[in-house]
Amino acid sequence: MDTAQKQQVLNRLKSIEGHVRGIQRMVEEDAYCIDVIRQLHAVQKALSGVSSMVLENHLNTCVVTAVRGPSAEERQRVISEIVRVFQETERL
Image (cartoon, rainbow, N blue to C red; front, side, top):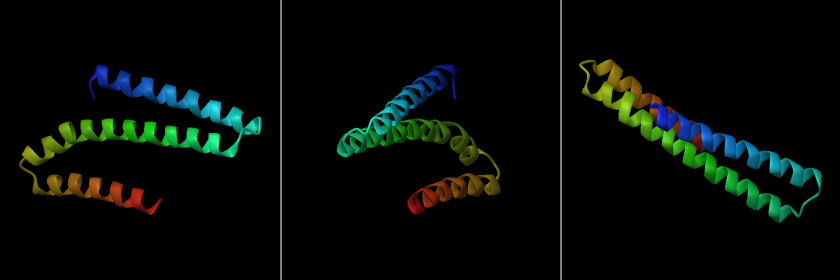
């Protein structure tokens, strides 16, 4: 991940962190449940966006290097790794 991409990811994560703190305050203050759920969904969407950014970087760097490389084992390893991550996500 280059410096600009890393900073963008970190900025988004800091923003999400602040948003989560806001949700904690809402719960502490007994905010209306639907409002809390809306904010939780916003955080989930934001995290999904960050995940997509990191995945795109991984595909464009590590995976491309492995696919273009001479090692069939390394190609299979990176592909299996990605498949496992998505399988784990489906189970959640």
